[in-house]
Amino acid sequence: MNLSHPAAAWILERLGIDSSLAGDLLEECSRGRSTFWYWKQVLVAIWTGVGSAILAHKLLALRAVATGCAVNGLWLFLWSRVVPVNLPATPRISLGSMTSLLLILLTQAVTGWVVARTHRAHAVPMVLVFAVWLAAWYFAGSLSDASRLLVDSMDQPRFRIYLAWYFTPVTLEFVGLLLGGLAGAQPPGRRARAQE
Amino acid sequence: MARQNYLGEFELVVILAVIRLGAGAYGVPISREIEEQTGRDVAFGTVYSTLERLQRKGFVRSDLGDATPERGGRAKRYFRVTQTGLRTVRETKQNLSKLWRGLRVLEGGMA
Image (tube, rainbow over all chains, first blue to last red; front, side, top):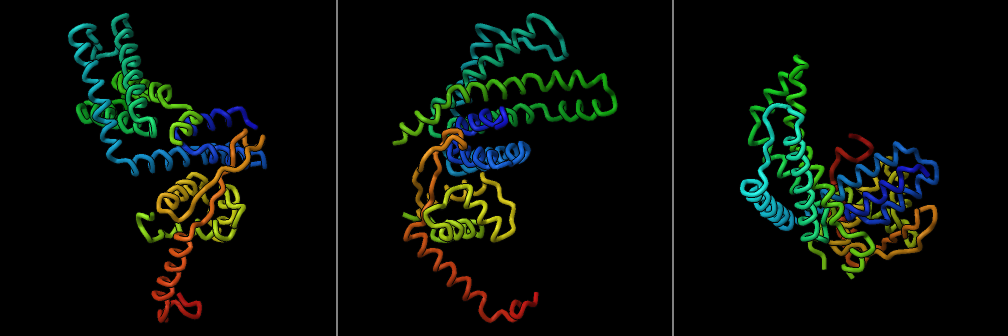
């Protein structure tokens, strides 16, 4: 068995996907299926599993977005009153910018954890809904900047660092939410006992 | 209680594979059966999400079997068709047969 296989099985179970499916994939690998086949199956399983969980629980998805917005609203309040987050518009490696980025990562991890804990039956799919909504909101607010940077970066390499800087906060938000969501999702055994 | 009493195309394929396999119907043989009978390359994730949908509709039910070392200690989930599922498959067959009947363009191997 490839070393990455148990890791993939762990991810599947944390995403709330039936552990029997992970077992079936491992069984097929023990009969000689390739690692490429395995990872392709894992990605399809994540896509269909998460997608069907969201489609089957649309109201829960709305509640997850509302919960995430409420928690982030609290962070925005704290950032404006207590700990100001000053992320410069141009790329700058400084203590202030690094602290701000770390703060974004940590606060979003907490938001992801809260969304996961308040939506235990489908924790990670609901965190993903909120993460996608947040990313869409971020891009919608600065679509013209993003498209201009993207076009400029294609033929002028000096703009690529600006593009990377533009994507850094939203990437950290996404990563933070996912890490917090994975930490907040119940382990499969406990989830099964809770559903009994 | 079934929420919807109709079967989609892939749902019909999956439930027929479950019926054909009988007591040994779990993810691996179900996927193999579909591949062998239809020539389709199916993803396990798609088969499982379809089975989950069929279970929600009340057409199949599942039980956990034994865990084996080759499966990383994870149990097999065996699927079995319910009476509602069997009745729905029969109705689907009848409805499709009615639609099929009298279509000359599809008779005698002509496309």
